[in-house]
Image 1 (cartoon, rainbow, N blue to C red):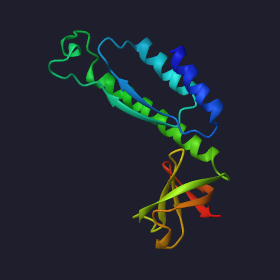
Image 2: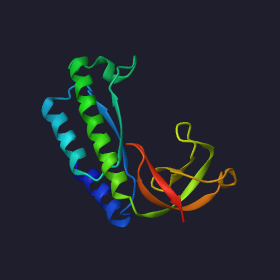
Image 3: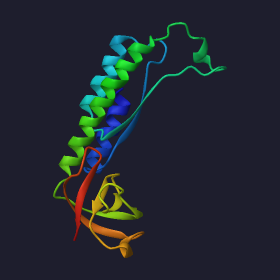
Length: 159
């Protein structure tokens, strides 16, 4: 726990705007309520920006497939839901903290289907939607992040 916590905090110290993601496995055999709550609190406390949450699933031939202290599926489902909700909150908070910042964005070679805007990605993994012509596709552009589009992306303006 301490090593992971220190690593995340050190990254944030060196790169204050870093987008730090984390894979979270829920329901490994033997995961107690106390162990889950410990993991949940650690994630809540750390400046993580996005989570990939997935339930444990037994794979034939692996040591864990023979473990007997399996976590009930309904419990795993509820725990995954809690952590995903926390992840959505952390993602939105991170995106909101970036409003007003300028960043370099790699404009992709396609537009966002819903808005028709150019779609790009910043170095810290923020999906950014901007107005512009197709000749900006596949180029790096300096963009001012002006606000949230949704819980997963931001609106930007070319600078």
